[in-house]
Image (cartoon, rainbow, N blue to C red):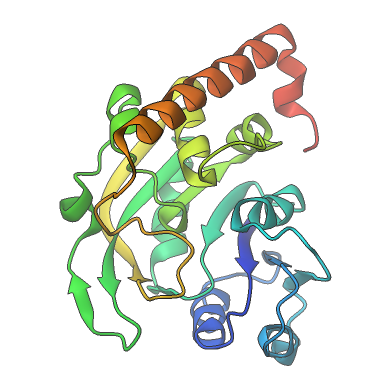
Amino acid sequence: MISVCMATYNGEKYLKRQLESILDQLGEGDEVVISDDSSFDDTISIIEWFDDPRIRLLKHNHFHSPIFNLENAVRHAKGDYIFLSDQDDIWHSRKIAVMTHYLKDHTTVVSDCVLIDEDDNLIAPSFYQLNGSRPGLTYNLLNNSYLGCCMAFNRKILHAAIPFPRSIAMHDIWIGLLTELIGKPVFIPDKLISYRRHAANFSSASEPSRLHLWFKLKYRLQFVWLATARLIKLNLNPNLIHASP
């Protein structure tokens, strides 16, 4: 079973097209779990317009955070494989089939993507090339390659990652770091989504970091501390990794 997890907030402009690109690839027993953070545009109406039993909508939330809004969706996922999705990208038709194939032998799969602007114009032909993406614990502490909308993982990683620590900078970095510590990641060359960059995006993964050097060092040390604490907790109680999140 596939669970696609999405966090929405005022996503009316691109949401219909994104959901169409996802639902076209899912089977009858799969699901799209959407957690909405109290949108006040037509986001909810668009989701309900689909009238698709595979969509599970969690609404009336007040997280005021894309990280913990997504965590709410992930907590409700029932699938063996969890795919993360933004509300404004476009999935290519082979995404689920290709990534599911790799998930048979790996805990986490990361794909490449093309970057587009708000009008579907190409910005860059490869996020990997732009970012220098590759696996490796030390490398990803210095230069994160785990882009959430290009990730899928199994329930081992889900159980390890939940709950998200309150102070993490972003959920994809957290999941990627845990994968490097306890999982088996693979970065595949396939470009499986059109990743949209526009003024309303929550993150700026495609842009050079403007964060102060001290802040970047501080949050990396914080990630190491949090991941080490989670690893110790899992080692002391291995049953936690198989428990319901």
